[in-house]
Amino acid sequence: MPNPTAAMLVIGDEILSGRTRDANMHYLAGEFTKHGIDLKEARVVSDAPDAIVAALNALRAAYDYVVTSGGIGPTHDDITADCVARAFGVGIDVRDDARAILQAHYDRQGLELNAARLRMARIPDGAALIDNPVSAAPGFSIGNVHVMAGVPSVFQAMVASVLPTLTGGAPLLSQTLRVMRGEGDIAGPLGALAADFPDLSIGSYPFQRDGIFGANIVVRGADGARVDAAMTRLSGLFAE
Amino acid sequence: MPNPTAAMLVIGDEILSGRTRDANMHYLAGEFTKHGIDLKEARVVSDAPDAIVAALNALRAAYDYVVTSGGIGPTHDDITADCVARAFGVGIDVRDDARAILQAHYDRQGLELNAARLRMARIPDGAALIDNPVSAAPGFSIGNVHVMAGVPSVFQAMVASVLPTLTGGAPLLSQTLRVMRGEGDIAGPLGALAADFPDLSIGSYPFQRDGIFGANIVVRGADGARVDAAMTRLSGLFAE
Image 1 (cartoon, rainbow over the protein chains, first blue to last red):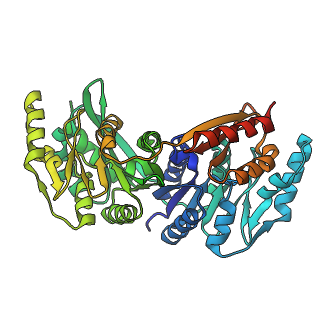
Image 2: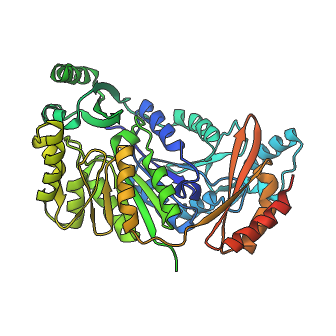
Image 3: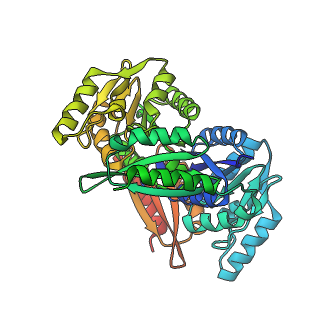
């Protein structure tokens, strides 16, 4: 059975303007790989409702799981929850269980649950809350879409909450051989090897360091014996 | 006149598996912002021809410029050039000018221009070469699509080659105020300010450090006097 597929939608002008470098995509990619879920696509869109709704609908139709990050805070530019409700064609309002979580959190801090903070209790109809042990304001899951915060520490906590509830597949096994030769020298035999192991994914990732060209050759697959067999051939081909 | 729009397409399994953290999107976002080009969307897709062609056709129809990174090396998993040719419905073959560049480069190094390396001279019909001062193998531009290497040093050199040829707009001016208060405290007045300056983009980017919550409030716009006016109001609102 093939592994479940997933996509990520990063929401935020700050990534596209170059102000902030996204860290959540790389984190989610690693967690999904460990869990046997194939991240197939990621998109970054700006804080524009039409762009968010269109991307969300395209991705949730195409993949088993969708994770979003960003845009669920209390400020005027946090519009993700409303866009998700629109994409699913459902209503959205302050919900009692989300409000209770926020009320308890701000009571503990001696802060007022004002109108802005209460916006974070607005949850699309039919969604289930995602626990936020860092800063209380919950994410939520609706259909196959999991809506999480953009602040990396909160995003990571929410991934930890949701991941055990997702059906994973066989974790991809991966082995890497570092070859200190230019890709042009290794491409011929490597292509022949890839043709002999069509069940594996064999990638070549070139690098350049101090003027020396090399490549990391990564062999990935679900069957450990096949990965080992390819690595044995690989080592024979490119032994220094 | 609104600024030109752009999208980026990152091609590579290694990003989606979590093996490599993409650096090119953040770099391009910064360069485009300086140049007055609005990066509106970015996508990451795997080394799958259908996914690459579909994303490329969607993005080149929707935005003024598209930049791709990755998949133009000599190995079997480098399929970007073929996918670009397919997306544009044109042929692709080894081209003399590209072959001459590679021949000279490998002659200088005493290396053979073998079949694998010659793959890097395969250029879609009608494309213009992009100079690669780092490792010779050229990128190319076809229509509004600019195809660049994934290795960051080469990607950055190709961006430097192409950027002067793209029509830019008014560079966005941006000022930031750091406020050491939770977003819930500042959201109300900030929303009112944003409503009073609809011509500006006013974003709030929360952070958490050592348990303290704060936010960077970023005001962006093409008109410096308006940005100054909003910043003056902002400083008055949130003076510590």
